[in-house]
Image (cartoon, rainbow, N blue to C red; front, side):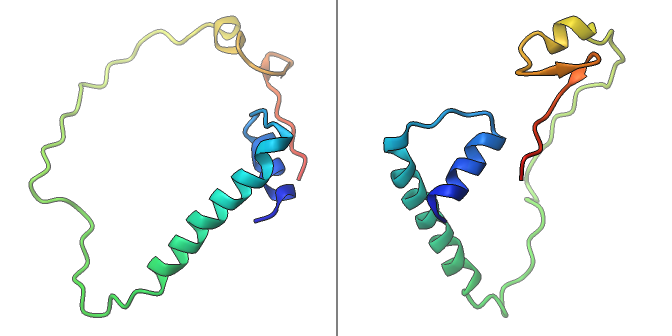
Length: 92
């Protein structure tokens, strides 16, 4: 991952990034990506599939309808809005 990709990720996430941190962040991303590559290279041929934890006790709350947030409250911290909706910058 290069600095341009780091800038793009931070821009899409609406996060600010100091110029001095860009190289460090790129290195950290690359370290994580390298580790993921090691995981993908592991041979799991004889490993049983495990899609759930058998002893896990999920606690669910009853689903009860409630009044929604009013539009003004929902949008008050939005970076940008248009016509009463969130406005996203889709620069790729």
